[in-house]
Image (cartoon, rainbow over all chains, first blue to last red; front, side, top):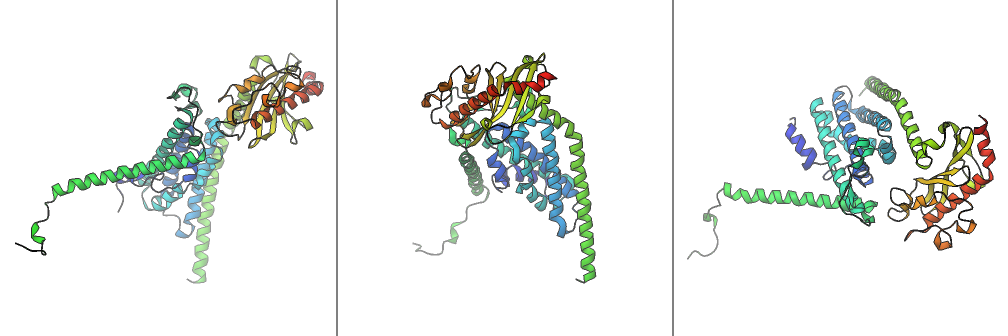
Amino acid sequence: MSTSYRDITVNGLWKNNPGLVQLLGLCPLLGTSNSAVNALGLGLATVLVLTCSNAAVSLIRGAVTPAVRLPAFVMIIAALTTCIELLMQAFTYELYQILGIFIPLITTNCVILGRAEAFAAKNTVARAAYDGLVMGIGFALVLLAIGLVRELFGTGAVFANMQLLFGPLAANWQITLVEDYQGFLLAILPPGAFIVLGLLIALKNRIDEQLAERAKAREPVAAPAPSRRVRVTGVIE
Amino acid sequence: MSTLEIRRSMLRNSLVLGLFAIVTVGLVAFTQQSTAERIAQAERQARIDALAQILPAGSYDNDLLDSQRELRHALLGPRPVTAWIATREGQPAAVILQATAPDGYSGAIQLLIGVHSDGRLSGVRVIGHRETPGLGDKIELAKNRWILGFDGKSLQQPGESGWAVKKDGGQFDQFVGATITPRAVVKAVHQALQYVDAHRDELFAQETAR
């Protein structure tokens, strides 16, 4: 009955990725993906909340009756999000100001309640925490990918202002790929987020298709071709 | 289900939920307690860093954040404006105003305007705006050096007619595709200078008397 860790990993990162397949949590995904540092900041916060909330939900899954299950889950998620928000305010104040409303909105990210309901409430603490971690990483990776593409096309450089997240040491992490870039406005504005997300989903589907084709191409070698005796119509000499 | 059973399940459920509320609120309260000091420190540091951009740390010797006050005047717009008064050895050094340019292209633009006691601008920075990325956002120092053009300017230099964008016959550049944004900023800075010029003595009186 219980899912293996390998399956949990594949599900979270690829097969059932929250950003590309479940399409949950689109509001933060589109809203904070205009640069790598914003994307990474919100991605990490989401990973933390999701892992802790999954573990907590799994821990109390025997104690709550189905009737009050949802309010109890929401309370846990809201409390954890508030704690993360306070911690970010204390340790990464500037990033906290940039991400602003999107941090408290992690509470309303459907991925988190979705995983609590669909997985954590039915599995052991270790599995639930691992599922939260992998789902969170899957979400964060999509967020980061969109952030990188938008920042690159929008400003010609990536990883600008990383010191907001990693301290003064990271101030020179910026990689300028195109000098004297004029900027491509559409990538930074909200439509850019939709376009890049659409392209990413298309890319994932294309890869899945190719994998399926390759698997199909391998099949006939394994199984012998059906014999000709099945032909029952037509003229035989 | 009998009434008794319903009652029993209601009681159990509300007890469980109540217990949860207590635990989660406790968790939040604990986190808030343990981070409160650091958050206050981070906020203070962020404000000092912002002020230091337009007024170098060595040019005053009072506690800037301590001198904070609210100003109201027609020239500064309808809302009270936060101001910090800098002094050096008891003498007036500079005033920093957190002014608002109400007529940006998409809403108000928040500015930090530093004025030396002799009426020259020590600097201007944009601390909040919603102008179009790529066009109006060149007022940010991170995007463009335009905002540095205010350094050292005063009511006399340029004179009255110079305090406008070039398109309106003034001295300040506008941006390609964005005139409204720089026009709003120039107007707000000009009005702030006029306010400081008219109220100079009264602004410094309290701080220099200390």
